[in-house]
Length: 258
Image 1 (cartoon, rainbow, N blue to C red):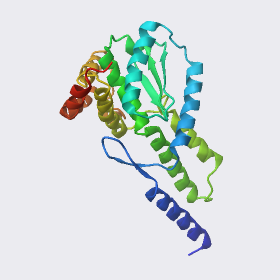
Image 2 (cartoon, one colour):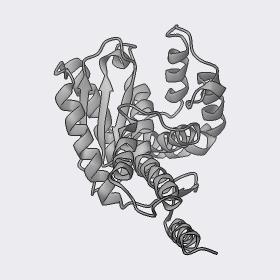
Image 3 (cartoon, one colour):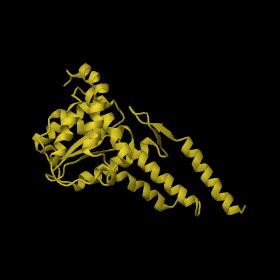
Image 4 (tube, one colour):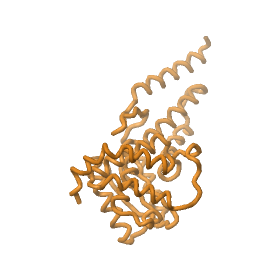
């Protein structure tokens, strides 16, 4: 065996050990996650990405939108019980964009296009609970870790050095809420965690069903589920309805909040 091949195998072995020692567990679902970067690093990058996104966006200061988002967001944040998060909620004025997103550390944005659907506080809690769930489950950090592991693996097969390009790949992976989508597994996981958050915040989790029914009725062509990283609305509604009995008691215990 040549020295170069020994070096490559050694680097691959080190990566394997790093993977074995860098697992985390997602809340509610208990799914094992690969984490190769620290939570503080992901929060720092999330804060920077949020700052840049908000600086480029046209923000809405209309109290009709902002008051609802911050009222619901505050209750979801309290239910999340993450005192180390620097929570921030903003509304982006894009009437044609039906979307919301969150970045590591509790940085959340909701678009006016979504709010113009006429969502109730409970329906908005379903959306914001889902987005905050991505942050709580550290899906951004997981995606960055996957990108890093892939880059290390590729470069271990080559020079054995992590180039600046590898680090850039990690930074690009953070753009999830703003650009790249989460995977279907992460989306379904965020639905479940979001149901728990909204129930703890005193919002009826059944509103998640009515919200996705509204999304079904917004019109426009949608790609088949197998072509998308997001579950179809029909699949999502079915899974949420099946999970509701698990979260209704939590809602009943907290329904007088607010």
